[in-house]
Length: 346
Image 1 (spheres, rainbow, N blue to C red):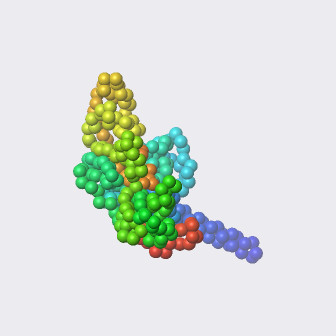
Image 2 (cartoon, rainbow, N blue to C red):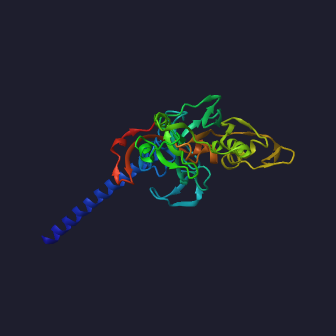
Image 3 (cartoon, rainbow, N blue to C red):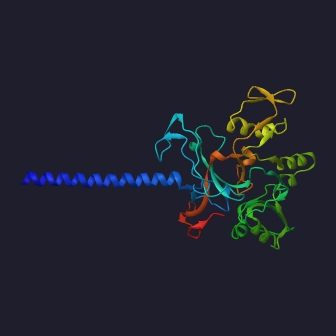
């Protein structure tokens, strides 16, 4: 009788274990499927997207908008481990929208080496689309000849000059939204801070303020040094190629398109002394582009490594569209930012 009870208990325990393991396996499989094909969460580690996204924000990213990208490496789910020598073919399932100018997207950092899906995830705002011509002058982004309207929360560096004899404390600026306030070490009347246009306009109305303008290194310099600084602050114009475009190479455009054509398009290209190029073993100047490219900027324009520094984002590196801040943690104050919970990313 006792042996029979023990056998029944053992069988019941095995059934419960089997049920638990089945439920656990289904839950892990469902979580992996959701993360692979639908939604993934990311934490913001740097201030390059302030004020739209703050350090400590946790963002939900949709892979359904532009189409889920299937893995191109073989490895363990939810870990950084993968088989180095195996590359799967690139495949993206259909999405229900195209990338739009102004979208905040997550993508894999293009200039890193290794499989695309194992590169570091970055988050920036799309400013230039395939077919656009883009340049930046006096901190204004021009797309196809028209200024790009910055979202309200785009932040930049400002330079404030006080009236003679006036005083203004950094705390008073920070209280209304200015960040990283600093006083010039050489001129007591100069202050520098990061802020949105709305905050800067509010500060400009202070009685202590003489002038307020976007920060420019050239303003603090003179003569030839100032002219060189202005040249450094200008960017472009550049053409953003798309799938099927024929790109014409010159010695002037080659430096910008080098990474795009060699790393992402897979060409072997060598410039020649006569100004032409050796493209895949043949002399020429033309390359046909096989995928779309995008120009991205951080919303914290003077504190962001983006397309100005490392070039365009290839379509196969795009992960998805940022939808919502589902959690936000202020590490300096050790508290939740309740006001940011469930805030849409715009």
